[in-house]
Image 1 (cartoon, rainbow, N blue to C red):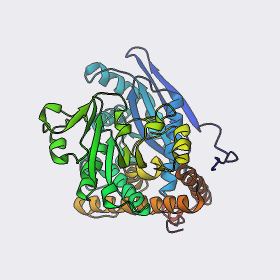
Image 2 (cartoon, rainbow, N blue to C red):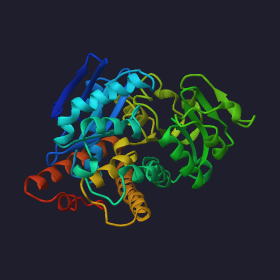
Image 3 (cartoon, rainbow, N blue to C red):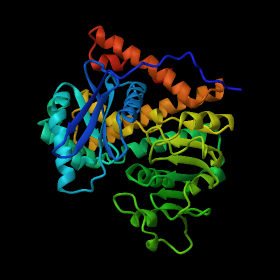
Image 4 (cartoon, rainbow, N blue to C red):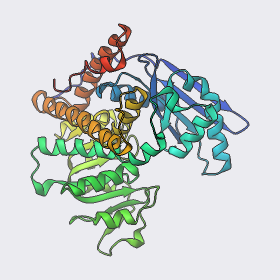
Length: 401
């Protein structure tokens, strides 16, 4: 029986954790930097009622491993605002105050972007209030970052699809088993649904905050997408009558499928519901969607789990590429193609490495991926300390090993 490696040492604490408050606008937030490589770090900003510095520290650690596993010499960070304000003037004031107070960190090498609850428009409020121009701190382009990101919105979902294909092929799933349930139908979940469907994988269930939409014969993906708003909520009235729905919590776990893609929130699968999982493999398309206890329980049952630091690294990878100045000087169309191809290369190679060692060594892919990530972060850190450029440091990572 597999037993986790208890001798692996994790860093004791983040490199920096700072609380940001403004009583006038009711702001309480944090910026947590897990690691600095070359004096820089990056990560998203989330805005949820229950976010705190402990959650952000775990997410910042995940970002460190995600970036190092992708071979990118920049540290991991995460920011958060504890707020339930709806969109409007009061919310925008909080976000602007956060940006103004976090400005020294941004100008000091910490990039904070979008994450759960904070979209591109609100990220722009943070940057504007901080007087921060990403083009100054990253790579200058002949077009705006907004233009680029409008074309790269689906790059994280694209990477999740590549990881899903690797695990399905490596486990030799027959075509009839290539069915998928997608938990979460935001930007990533919708991108995954479209991508997997185009590759012949039947989508048998999707989940939004109202519950589960499913059909064992397969869902009409295009009709489903047309019935979904920008926040990821599916209008049940616009679906064909034969499509089934359920508001039962966690009902989606019980749907028989080959592939379960977790593309919503953290801790979606945990020790209290893990026994309901009815999939052959899980792909983590969100940050930390399986608890540690759930990962071990799934491993004991023979259910493979592709880690988040491998599968959902697409958006982080693209941001890091431009912050580090790695992009070629080409047209916007060519650059978008290059971004998707680069994510394909990194995610596919890391996925193949994780599955190959999982099948050979019998260890959970989480342990394998984290071991490799820790090794790579030290290689990158050492190279930068020796005076190597970020590009030369990145070239030391051998994705074929």
